[in-house]
Length: 372
View 1 (cartoon, one colour):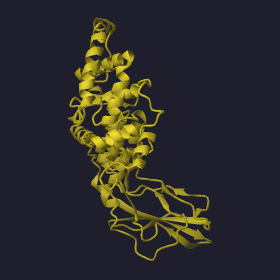
View 2: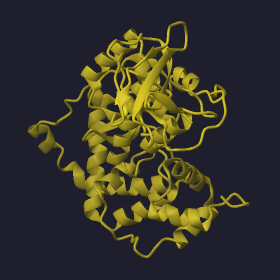
View 3: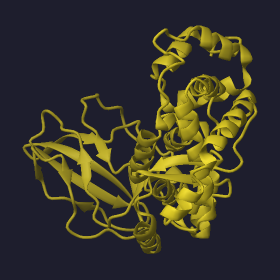
View 4: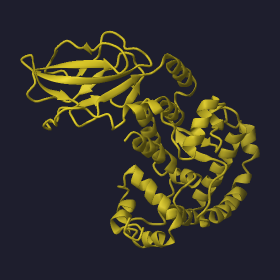
């Protein structure tokens, strides 16, 4: 933003080129909701290659039915649909499909052939009504879709209700529905354990070490599901061996790996660690048995992680059996118990399926912000 609180020319250019980072894109989209001057300036800066007569993709139609779509994009898509009867008919069909899903309690929302034929005459009328309704909808800068957010999730269309319910996926456990409700409102529930593991106030003591690229990779600042996690680190160029040390953050003795060869940059302990316990770990770079470097190094925080409690592991297994294909539900569930890498992978998949949707980008950006 410039000194007057408006988008800079560079931000407008990055917006059209789709090179903004997820967090920056969310900030720009939110600003465009309330700033008429920036919306008009953004339209004037639109590259010639972006034309209003481009074909309307299926993802575009889904985006129009989603909450918090930025007003400039809504206006451009409205112009394109207005010039395409086919797109208008598809939009009407999609609206009808959403209402059918809302009335059904499970994934089995397919219409039988008789019912489909019985309602086929509605489509041309619905197309006209939907188009007129769409223009009224898109003309309001303060519009919010109260009926829910439409997403593609693992190849299926779902509607996320403001309550957190997802009719196409059936009844959700109350805790999960509450977490989805918060996520749909832009508030990702992340386990407080993760924030404790990433507390920047707990930095390592000692002198600053020279930067050599030697550092720990994972697990760092997360809960892990396995009681035998695999430790990863980057190579130290002068080392011909490594040793991993693991120390419980509560009571317990230090555990160390045997000396590992220079080609190894990962190690899995043979015995299990304790569920619901927090640990700190480090890796020593060795040369002829003598330590020449250690990671992490001051003033960085220690490399901390926690083992998932058994009851939460059992809860996740039940969710996977019922909702395991849903990137949205599993991403929210993983974040709530602190499995950061797993949550990030689910939200990244959701972003890929919904490139024009605001909610998946907000979830991914929210996860990134929460763990920084």
